[in-house]
Length: 335
Image (cartoon, rainbow, N blue to C red):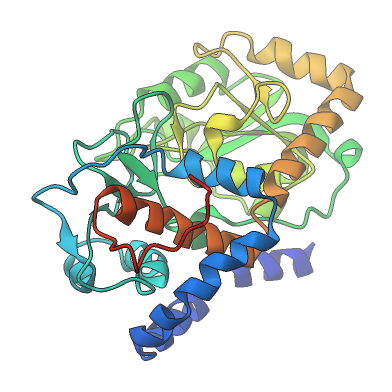
């Protein structure tokens, strides 16, 4: 287990991430722009229907729109006051495009649909969210996958949950309600990790991701937007337990099927005990959910495909905001 903890710690370490991205900034943008056509046309090597479905899921724009008066030039992105992680994850792909193009950016947790077409990490799930165009932002934190050292049947018949509960400046009454209902439940090992806020009676020390994997069931409750831990849970041999998600990111949470990709509990959490007991008594069904979750995760493992999709999302954004000339637009027939 020590090896797995060390490996995961290295994956989470941001020193290499920042080093790579600062070195990338030394490379002239013109070299990236010259390779844009080749990169986008490489989409021909992938299944066109699959590629189109993901592209048009992230970017739902389907009619010409003004980019809006608050849009900024790509060359001025670094002036946005926010986490440098959001900036680097976006700049990695915007640098392939002409720097005089404009875009709106929301570099933070987002739970609303803006008035103008905007590039952002997250958005509400549902119809009429086309102005919220998703890019793969904050991926070092969110797109963390694990190599699970345990098989499902080796794990404890319990739900593990650790998290921040009603921390200052982050009111989360839904998490408070869950803890009030289940903190002392015999099938649950729950704990609050923030010292300030919440309930001091719920305080427990943080545990590693690897320690979470000793349990068959892992709680995944949304926080400010999506649940950060959902992605690594679904890459493991444990099962995520959660209500139907309200927000989505590049991970396409809105496509997840209840009791197929995760164990679904009611919005009021009232059926948690019943669902845990059912899957403890029916381990084969739980393992089927694990397999389905792993299959969903697998589609994000191809870095070349992820790069192509990111560029396609941006090209579609600039096309529908009427900023690409006929000579700049690279025909793909994907939208």
